[in-house]
Image 1: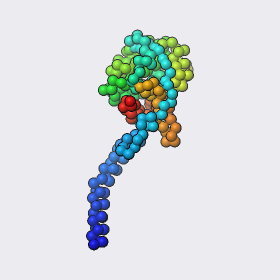
Image 2: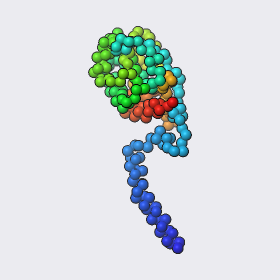
Image 3: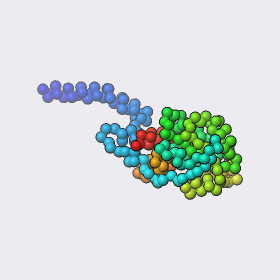
Image 4: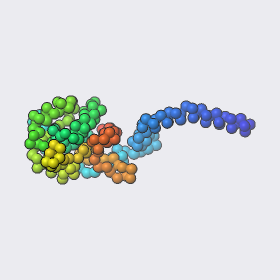
Length: 228
């Protein structure tokens, strides 16, 4: 009887291994098991606030968009949105950042409560007319994607003091300006939100250049869009 029991148990283990283990290995290999995926499984009670830390309120802003309209942070109340600092003639990282923004736009094309704010750090050149052409060139379709320009001092204060995202002029740099390739993620209530690193600390801003940063944003924007 004992031998028959052992045989039965062995048979069950064998069947489990044949059916389920390849599926598990395949899922891990395809990088489908993410932190957020695991935390959203039954038995876990983590909320969006557990997953994405609140860094603080995003600074207020009021600038002119590509259509000559005044746009403020109030236009984004009730929306999840991204903020970047760039300039249209940038020969280095901006084309990559803009390409990634278009990817994010297309990924959330059915979400009316998702938006993007792209603020030029070269307002002397980037007039509303120039920014409108730039938006058309990129293939912007999201009505909540505004390219903003205005007073240079105001914009630099907004970048460096408001968001603490570096932007500056440097005649020796390609294009005459320097800036980070970071994206700020803002929730529906105007809070800057951020995932945590492996040590539990906030990353604060997302890498707008590397694929890993864009993948993280796709996951985290989805979480915030579902947040009440």
